Amino acid sequence: MKLYLKGAKCYTKKCPFERRPTPPGQHIMRRRKVSEFGMQLREKQKVRRVYGVLERQFKHYFETAEARPGVTGENLLRLLETRLDNVVFRMGFATSRAQARQLVTHGHFAVNGRATDVASHRLREGDRVDVREVSRRSTYFKDVKDALRAAQKPDWLAVDADKLSGQLSALPSRDQMPAELNEQLVVEFYSR
Image 1 (cartoon, rainbow, N blue to C red):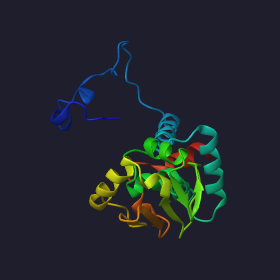
Image 2 (cartoon, helix red, strand yellow; image 1 turned 90 degrees about the horizontal axis):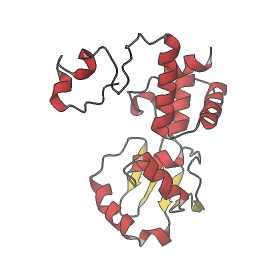
Image 3 (cartoon, rainbow, N blue to C red; image 1 turned 90 degrees about the vertical axis):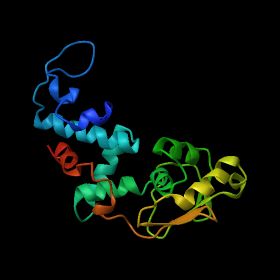
Image 4 (cartoon, one colour; image 1 turned 135 degrees about the horizontal axis):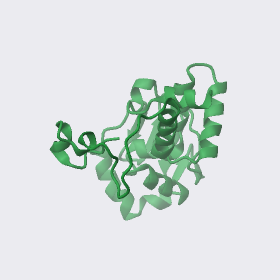
């Protein structure tokens, strides 16, 4: 996948990624056509790494999504999007999912008034996420309060920057989730 590390050069035909017959690295190997299985595996691994989920957890999420009514791929992405660490990231309390996960595991957040340190906590529609009173006094959350006002948040989340809290107002639809992920390939990977 192109990472656009060469700047404007990657937008032209002179991009090294497209010109070289070999992948980057010390040991020269041919670029081979990726098989259908290889594409499915790469997409599954990409989704796993984006959300920071281990293989066993991810398979469990897939089985849960498959058991629910509706499109399996959308259900899978919806389950991953409504994890507490991802919602904290989407609300703007953290700059990355890894940072959001660390903030949650350190006990800085409460869900519906109850303190929780489980990053994989599944939120439902109407659940409220607050920064705990003890944590509000820290310099990190004082700085975040200013950044929250300017940050753009998804439509399915309602965030109150002054109170350092937010609410899951609705479950995200497919067009509100990341477009660069192809959930259909993940479904095909698990259904072989």
